[in-house]
Length: 326
Ligand code: ATP
Ligand code: LTN
Image 1 (cartoon, rainbow, N blue to C red):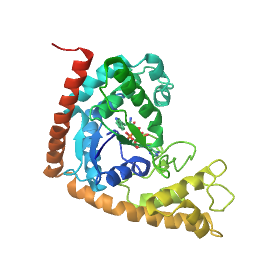
Image 2: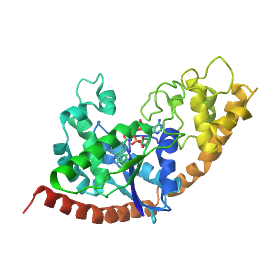
Image 3: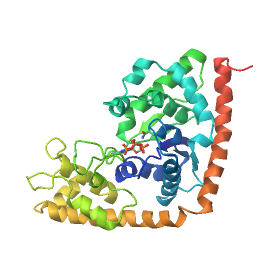
Image 4: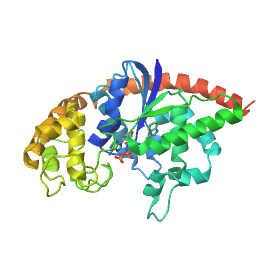
């Protein structure tokens, strides 16, 4: 059995980009692998968070994990700050990394751009992400395309430690989907769909009501050509909608192109609304059932204990290799 690890930040409403790029893979992987799915609250505080909102978002993400089909009995579902080893290994890997490689990360550049004051944690963020992954001797990390550079750095840090101190870490691989790995904003198909974009119509959240889903899709930016064809360069809007349609329905994009030959964008969008609403309805219903249940809190406590048992062992090995402690 392979080890799988991934994390989602509790920073807002999870959208279909998060789902189709990463979370959908979490569910697919849990039957044949030993999976760890984390809610990374220590990453969330790299930018200021309102404490009440953060607590709410942690439980929202946990409930969504379960609502999409992650079984907390099979997979280990837990909150990062409940397992102290993440912060500890994060510090050690911060010391192994160079400022140059951290300054080169595009996520750091994007999030710090134009800010008057930039938190140090925003820069050292990828070392903590590497710690998350390496703590569990992870083989596979299912994530969206935007995390490629962070996974590469994680591999570099693992190899660096192994070369310097002897075999300490498993070197993990990223797992990226062919369709869905980069869902773009509905109002601007040149930008990635994001939780933090100001325009609500730029994204579809997993908990959106059908009326909001319809509005966002029917208003989505397309082009004036009017033919349903995949062409990222010249037709980024309709190409993005084709990716979403294909990822939700499982129908290959080429088949969708054939199916909609001679049809306008209106017909295509109407069907996409239906497909999206049908995919999200059961998730929203299940979410409501569990979000305020004791069962949710209990499964997070159980998850943290199971994760901690493994993380503590890894830390003993790491301290020993590096000559730390007595
Ligand atoms: P956002 O930019 O939406 O605020 P994020 O990337 O900052 O999200 P997370 O919530 O931690 O932070 O992301 C969870 C997962 O979703 C990651 O694996 C990430 O790669 C993936 N992801 C985020 N946005 C997209 C997108 N637009 N398309 C595909 N995958 C995405
Ligand atoms: N950096 C990721 C979230 C994240 C993560 C991880 C993903 C933190 N730790 C470990 C995979 C594995 C993001 O911003 N989406």
